[in-house]
Amino acid sequence: MLASSTNMNYRSFIPEVKFEPAPIKLEAEYLYYFSRIEPRFGAVINRVYPELQGIIEKSENKSEAILKCREFAEKVIENNKTSIIKAKDDFQNDWKLVSTEFLETLSEHFETEWPRDKGVITGYVSIVPIFPRMLDKYSFFVGYPVKIARAREIIAHEIIHFLWFKKWKEVFPEISTDQYNSPHLTWRLSEVMDQIILQCHPRLQSLIHPTIWGYPSFMDLKIGNIGMTEYFVNLYTKCVQEGQSFENTLRALWKEAQENKEVLEKF
Image (cartoon, rainbow, N blue to C red; front, side):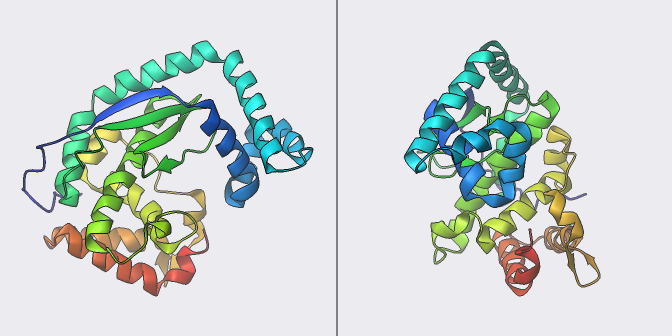
């Protein structure tokens, strides 16, 4: 386990984390997106909502398909309204137990302050079984129904992305923000490192108690003779144990990601 790489104080501003039901417009758009545009997640949608694929296929165009997704989402939400509201309250109450310490610790570790113009991070409680994050809005999805312990890990995972990419922009201003999303290598590295940081930073790990190390597909990927996740764990822990700045840690991680691009592009 690791100690934080810095003792600097980054606690001058900490955003609030609030939970609310996902807007129906976003529910519809993401049901369509994960069903038709992002194939790696289509199987998840089909498993949870097998009837949705047929509804989309009968639509004549994208606009009609999104409208059908909206009608579908409205029915699901109406049938589960009470449980969704309870989940929202449960997530809010549980996250309050760790929010301040988590956000402060993350800021200290990444060596950057939370942006003052992003005073609220919004967690949308959603029927979509995949959990995107919207970097520009500082908002993310967390699914209904999800157990509290799992929700805490999902919330932590998505919140890490916000500060990770703020720091990333400070270190690599030449990389376009378009590269921060799937399927680009910058996005892939962030997904690999997100769970590694949760698992390997002692304070974050003790707050969140993460149970996974990343996508299931990570398990089949190797760099040389060791697993891809273990490879990046070793690099990350080496940087922290040597007392390197987080900027230098990011530079080392990015160098290795570029050199092993073919492996990371397999998930």
